[in-house]
Amino acid sequence: MRTLPDQEIVVVGGGLVGAALAWGLARRGLKPLVLDGEDLSHRASRANFALVWVQGKGVGAPHYARWTIAAARQWPSFAAEIMEASGIDVGLRQWGGFTFGLAESEMAMWTEEVRCVAEALGGDAPEYAVLDHAETARMLPGIGRDVVGAIYSPLDGDVNSLRLFRALHVGMLNLGAGYRPHSDVTEIVPDAGGFLLKGAWGEVFARRVVLAAGNGNTRLAPMVGLAAPTLQSKGQILVTEKCAPFFPYTSTTVRQAEEGGVMIGDSQEADTSSIATDQDISSVLASRAIRTFPQLGSVNVVRSWSGFRVKTPDGLPIYECSPTHPGASLVMCHSGVTLAPHHAHLIADAIADQAAMLADKRFSGRRFHVSQP
Amino acid sequence: MFHSLESPKNRVKITVDGKHIEVDATANVAMALLGAGITAVRRSVVGNAPRAPYCMMGICFECLVTIDGVQNRQACMVPVHDGMTISSQSGARTTEEGGK
Image (cartoon, rainbow over all chains, first blue to last red; front, top):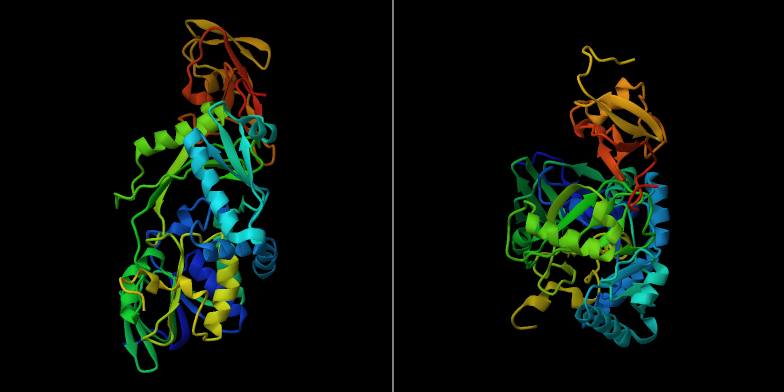
C-alpha cells in the first residue's frame, strides 16, 4: 500500500552523491524526494578523507582524468554556489596536495602514475611537480628524513566534508527537495509508468528513480535492469587532538583540518567485511604519518574510524540510464567530494532533461559485462 | 578557594609557570594547582577563554597543561613528583617538542 504521495522523481540515498543530485534536480525546478537509510547504515559520506583530489587519477582512463580535473576546477565556484544556497561555508582549501614517497619504489610508482596521465592528456594535463627530498623540504621544512620525495599538484585540496554533507542537505531542502531518513529502500518493483519503492517504512510510487545508494546500489540495480558491481574496500582513519597549524597543504595520507585536528588515513583492506577498526592498521597509519612528519610523534590520537569505499571493479564511477526500465538511472562513485560539482550540475541536468546518456558512455556499467555489446 | 581537609604528610616542590611551590606529595597535578589557588590552567583553543579542571576524573579534558615538556597532559590524571615543571597553555598545542 502506498504510504506516501506519488512522486515525480525519487533519489535513493542521501549521502554526498544523492544529496548533490537532489540539490541539482531541485535547482532545475524538480521536487525530488530523497529516501535515506538509517543512522547506522554504512556511509562512505561520513567516513571519507574529504579530499578534492586529481593527482594520479585516471591512469589508463583519460576520460576519468578529464572528468576529475574539470570537477576540481569547478570547485571554487561550486563552493560559492553552495554557500549561497545553504549559508554554509564548506571550507574549501585548494592550496595543493602532496603524495609522499617513503621509499624509492613508491616514488617510482607515483611518478609513473602522474606521468601516464599527463602523457594521455597532453595540453589538458594538470600541473604537477616531482620533488626530491630537498625540494619537498623547501616547501615543508618539518618533513622527515624518510621522505625520499613527493609529487606535488597545485589543483588538489580539501573541504570540511561534514559541512559539505550538511550544506548539500540544507541547500537541497531550501531549493525544494524533500528528505526522509529511516527510509531504507529494500525493493523496487517496476509499475505502470514508474516504480514502487518499498521498505520496512512503507511504500511510495515514483515516475522516475535515481539510485545513489553507494554500495547499496549493488543490490538495488538489478531490480531496474542495471548492474552495479563493487569490490570490498575498507579504509581507516586516525584523528589527533587539535594542533597549531603546521601543514598548510593536503595529502593522501595526512591532512590538517582547518580546526587543527590531523587526519591520518589511506589504508585499504579488501578481505574484511567487519566495520570495526583494526589496531594493526592503525599502527601502520601512525608509523607512516610520523615518518612523514616526525613532529606528530608526540601528538595524541583522539579518535579513529573506518568505512567502506564505494569501489567499482575498475575504481571508476558508473553513470547509466536503465536500457530496460526507462526512468531509472544509477549514479555511483568513490569520489563523492571531488565529483560533487559534476553530480550537482552535469549529471543532475542530464537526469532532469531525461537524456539518454548521463555522461561519457565509457562510464556505463556495461563495461563490466563479459561480452561488450 | 580550595584547601586540604588534612595536613599533607609529605610535600614535594614543583614549578608552575616559573613559580616554585610546595604541594602535597599525594596530589595529582590538578589538585595541586587548585590547592595553590591556580584555577585557570589554560586558555581554550577556540576563543581563548580561561579553562579550569572540571571533572577531576579524566573525562572532560579541560585541565590540559604542559608537564615536563609534554603538552596536553590531563592534569587530573598525573601524580605530582618532586621537581616537576608545569606550564599553562594558550591556544592549540604545537607539534614542536617541549611546547611553545
